[in-house]
Image 1 (cartoon, helix red, strand yellow):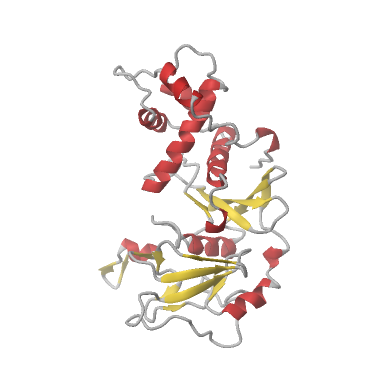
Image 2 (image 1 turned 90 degrees about the vertical axis):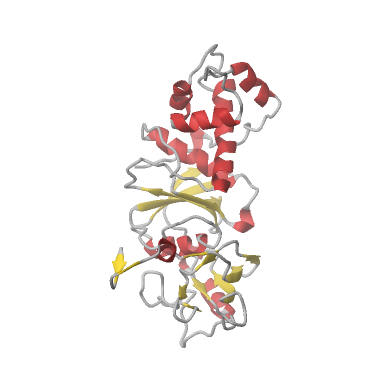
Length: 326
């Protein structure tokens, strides 16, 4: 892509910044936490001030987190005085609309439509957790704001504007209207990836929500008759997370699933049972040191490893509670 004869840097295109430029996020009225990564996507680059238009370029709708009768003043100091472009970004915990004025967030929170009705359709519901599918083409502004927020907590490139060919699968506490974690899925992926981007929001980490969503993405693949996996390349942190999940998935199939009791299995057998790509199966088996010199799978080693590490008992989606649609 070119503009005025000059090539646009990819980092500029995706809003990537090497250093953090927003110090804190005020997420709703009760949650406040530091950002992890920098992003220029929220800002007007010429002034380094927060852009006060919605991410699609329209003026904010009435009641949005960015709307006010006059131009809002930013809390950040000039770039030469502070390393941060903005001290606090105020974000609605229901719809992810944003502002740099705390009072505006308070006013918006009382009338945010997503506080009363969550977007999308339920695809999974247990007594504890629910997963909803939200179409990027139908709920464009919501998904754009979600993607903008995500860029402050992921270190890899991530789209945030053209969301119309993505679906978003979002986890809620059953009965709650507050998103806790999500993954996006590219509907026109040439590689048929089952997941493009995944994030558990900072206030809801260490609850196993990432594993739940990974497993749900493979349930979608199995439903569609696909052997699939996440978009590549994975970030270092993403690879660690997936290896943990893949190991658990392989373990379950060998010890309690379709492959239970088999005297010999191949990577292709595991692929068919799990929906994982063969390359991901082999990567997982190498990380578990379960391949022999002849590249055969040592079931003795595999079973012994997970006999000592029973980590799979509550890691998966309950298939009986799926409410999948097309």
